[in-house]
Length: 270
Image (cartoon, rainbow, N blue to C red):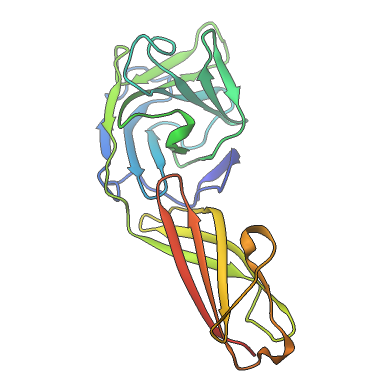
């Protein structure tokens, strides 16, 4: 299992650095340059247009647990322009044993931003960072690099970088979304004389990732006649006592930044 690193929208379950589920890429780094450094061996990146998330995985060959004297940083070149950001890098994700921070270049420094949709985990030498594409305004083709620093003396840290010599990897977003299955949470089977409520609407993708949808809204019919809904998105419906045996049909809609999902629920009221 991945140990959660302090912040995130949903902490990740076990993940392996293998061939990505869609059209991602894996990059090999040279190994053993500095035995004292946290040694980057493999880096992979993948994206899913269905939920607008980009996933980075970094395999550290000689650090099974994230030590207190180490830091890993993913630097993002959102537009591949050297004129923007710091030396072309517009955002960064910095991970230590104390937690993770996301920074965006403000012209002078990487200012820490807290309102984010991302999660971070580290276990068995594998760092996983899942980030919503819009947080750094990543273009369809973007650059990135990974650096590590380890040591107790801030003036003499052992470092590694991938790729070497200050270069960057280049990744082009895949346009093919992973297969998805919607999931709806309700307050229980519909009962006459009681409210029926859609609590949450989400989507689960074929790579095991998922997210709650936004802008969730509902409409419903009872016995073929439209009934009014209340609460957020009109997703709470009061069922009268004479609704026993009638068919309740609820249509639910929700969105990611790029895709709209729909689900129809059908019940017979008890």
